[in-house]
Length: 87
Image (cartoon, rainbow, N blue to C red; front, side, top):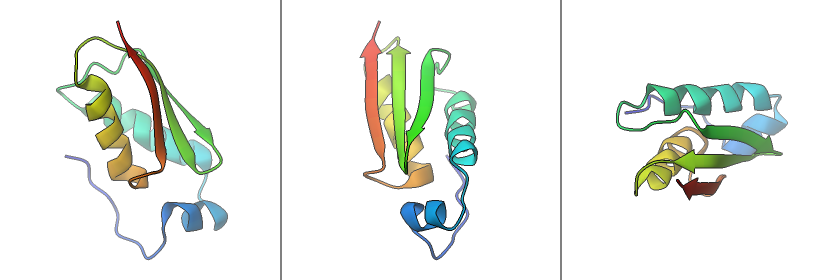
């Protein structure tokens, strides 16, 4: 479970209001590493404007979908692009 702070702004609005890309990236990375059912050791998180990019490798089927769901819980559906491969 990922805790989110309720605010009146969408992810794009928060970024335009000075929400730092580094803070978003750190939040997603922390949530991925905190997930007990996901090995996030080879997942890299980057930002392209307000879009979160997940790259790297996962070890099990379903892990990329789980990582995508975790990231979307933080930044919102449609703001995450998943480019991970199964190793």
